[in-house]
Length: 107
Image (tube, rainbow, N blue to C red; front, side):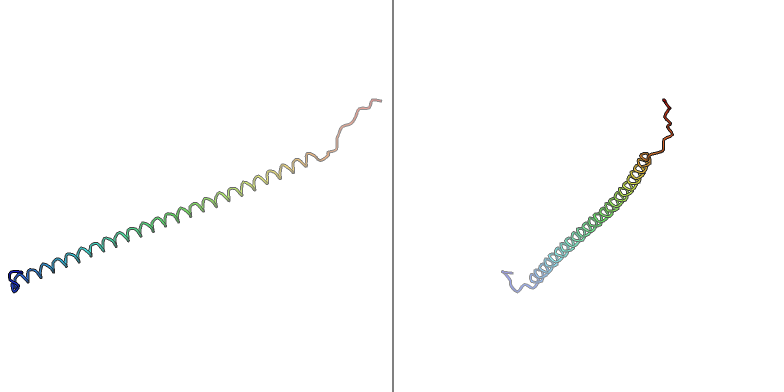
């Protein structure tokens, strides 16, 4: 081009080369954008999966906690019933029962 600035074939080739270069750059940019978008989507999916797992674990833990609490309440009720029964038995034993003891007459 420097030697012959009016060379149409050189201009056409140069123009075509620039056009291909721009297309390649655009294509590379598009691929990079797609790759970034895919990575973002994967990260979002992973985050959603982690959040869902955490929620499920929390629900399971809450269920276990509730079950343990119910078991504890039942055990306390049973223990209280046993204590009440024991107290009642102790009261019955302490009641004075008429004695059938007849002292022998020494006189």
